[in-house]
Amino acid sequence: MDFERSQRLQKLPPYLFAALRQKMAAARERGIKVIRIDIGDPDTATPDLIVQEMQKRIADPGDPDRHRYGCDRPAAEFPEAIKSFYKRRWGVSLKDEQVSITTGSKDAIVQFALGVMNPGDVAIAPVPGYPTYNIGHVFAGGFTHQVPLKPENGFLLDFDAIPAEVARLAKILWISYPNNPTTAIAPMEFFSRAVEFGRKHNVIIAHDAAYSENTYDGYVSPSILQVPGAEDVAVEFFSLSKAFSMTGWRAGSVVGNASAVSALKTVKDNVDNGQLRAIQFCAAAALNNAETLVPPINAIYQRRRDMAVGALNAAGWRLAKPKATIYIWAPVPERYKGDSGAFATDLLETTGVMVTPGRGYGQWGEGFFRISLTYPDAVLKEALDRIVAMT
Image (cartoon, rainbow, N blue to C red; front, side, top):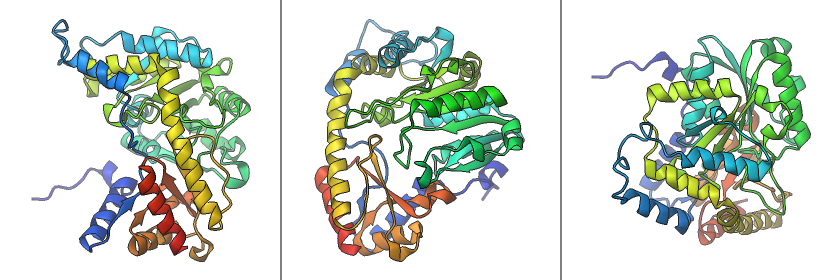
């Protein structure tokens, strides 16, 4: 017996990576050897220090609560490590009520929308951008106003492009720098402008900083909370997934405006039971040792970035080396006339290489495709050789 799906699910487009997985499965059934360079899931192992902390904590006979709900007796070390990290990293002092630990960023983005939006509310999201922003709005019964990120503007969100009526009605404005998928970075002046916009229009500025630690060539990514008064209007989403090769561990935080953080905590109290205590201890260990754990991981991505940009530029692209994230954002070849879907499909069918078409990130992502650097060097090189040979 088939049951009707909820209206909220009917409002969602197919999830980007679920659709890509279906395409790859169909290609494999036809005998195509598929090489994936599409999804940002680190291939490098979680650092030994973190793994050893897990081994110790999960087997600790002195902690009788180690296998129980993570919310009943949370590890105080995790939020303390978050506060210490923000102080060391950005000079930002956080109070207890300004910190919520999360199971990564993806869940928290949806939970946050549920905590601050009512049915019929509007939230603003950049396009191209992470599809989960809109998913959260739909689940909350709200609507998304999309603002284009344009290459001629360095893929920075243009606050002046937001209609006055949208600004008046909006509950949330999402920004994300370093940016996924475009790899763009933003100066402190941009974050100051965001805070000013939030204060003027009584809008929560939600900064998705999932890639703040994946930086290269001496670039240091800012936190929006460095802006004076940002805690009045802003929250920041931080994830350990990419910086520490901990995607499956599901560990992160939301910090900033205390009332917005409290709303998220209330949703979490009602819909999840927190993380395993051992994971919380491991996340604390990761943050407390960030200065030694993160650089070797970034060195791998920087080497792959240089290889990918070099190979594509030798084939006719004109790409600058991104200073952050774990991606390459490139225009599709001219003969595809900006059709990223056609390019990605042709690439898969002809060469077996799966990239992410830009249209999957919204209408203004069209004309581009994304390569992830989270694959072994040999795999990435073979994929690049196939792309170059086809184009």
